[in-house]
Image 1 (cartoon, rainbow, N blue to C red):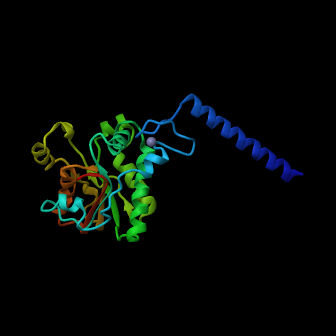
Image 2: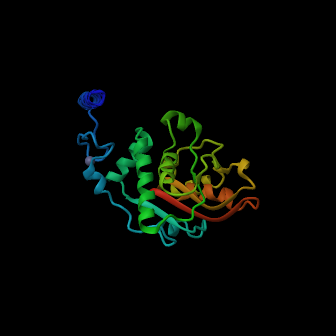
Image 3: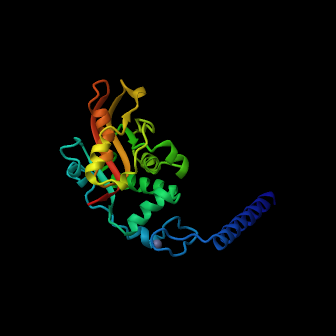
Length: 248
Ligand SMILES: [Zn+2]
């Protein structure tokens, strides 16, 4: 008798929860960040059709990945990986804009997990010992609410082994937005932009993987990694880079 009442009350609760979710979807309709269509309840940020039709990278995790080739002669990388081909005015650019400026942080975590899942599926669990992200200035974090690269890395480390160090790199000085500079200016200004956090000096990092959202010229990645590669008191065996998207 008691069991029957419990079952009935949990059914009523589930029905009530569904009703509330339906009402929320009706009152505050959610749309796909790529195509703009209304999302069904099981979809979040992106509709299933757009998600499966994203231009997934075919390069995998490798030392000949375009990420490595783009940084050749600038930073010695062990491996490179990116999830999506980035093109202007594409679904991917809309997605990355939503992640960066429109509060789609859960989408960043989801993409991070997707990266981890695909790497595991195709290559097994790599030997990354630590993960780090490109830092974002505190004022930007306050304005946007989060660092999108950190959300991506959190998704990645839900799947792959390795410790995520959220403050391995520091950004001491705010500079003009990188998007407003040309490539030469970006390369020059990025030389001294980032710093390795001194509290981690003496730490053995083994195989460090830097996670970021989009690689364009690679100047921010280069600057970040150069802040630690010349330091003798940090034990880094290898450095790799993975990004959610890459401009080919
Ligand atoms: Zn869609």
